[in-house]
Length: 456
Image (cartoon, rainbow, N blue to C red; front, side, top):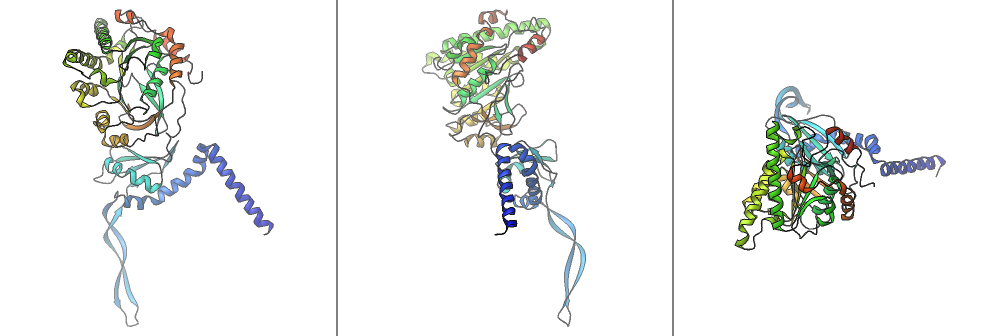
């Protein structure tokens, strides 16, 4: 073997090793510089064939320069004549140039006549297999335009924690499948319904929520129908905790009383909600964490019928009227079905935030996501047991996403509850209306000074 050949082989081996190391240790720059340009060329070059295979083309009449055979001459040569004529051709949707994203790419298409975004959504799985990507999501920013967002690899396989949010009533609990943060913002979406079977990540999400809200100037109220085993460790940061149905009924009566007094306060001040009140009059926000929602509606005998009816009515009143007066709900349950009674169905209608982890029965998934999008329901049923924390989330932008929460151990959440125990508002002061929130300037300075408990 000549020296030139050895030199070429060495250069190729070094280049291959360098590319592998580049891709392994800094995938983002490798994707932008090397992988994406090749992917964009491949997507652009194969779009016509893929659109034809996915039934996304339309027959259109076009003038085409064709050859028509003529008579056979005596010499045996076929005479042909060329002319323009109208023929039916398959026309593909116009595609703009693909643009890179953190976990893949996106491209904008112009829909053809008679097409709607649902046509592309139905073909999303076929498009993903044709291009060899993890998933394709379809959105429509305006009529006549469809955006295909491709995820090259699943970003939820490994989820790393993000810095703590510094906005009031805003908690970053995980990541979306797009690579962006999964945020629970009670100011935007006031009430949430969180369903999930045992070991699906439902309790971990509650831990992340407690850890994120513990430093903030809010009151936390717990409804723990497991006898207190879930929320008792967080008692130092809880303003009130109910562990039995009787205690929960008392707490709900208090919440209705708090809501009524805040109504009167806003009416006297001429405002529509507590956020329009002066700083020195604005009451402290209250976040209600409900674990095992079904236990509030289960009836062992007829003697509990009146208590259950009162519980259902009070909880529904809080859900219907509490947002404007700073009372927010986060309801969790393993089993949420219409068989629990009309109160659950009415409560579900008030919870615009939906989170569905892996569930054991289709009824719970239907109750949580069925009225939003059938595709979300199918994705929720496909969550494997080996991926705890993965859920289908109805986000505040009106779309649904696959998401995965950060792992927050019970010890970490308990440490946060103990560390910020001095910021727990007194429940008696809240009920009496004497607990007020700090001013906007002091609040902004306070939130900026919150340390990240994940790095503490």
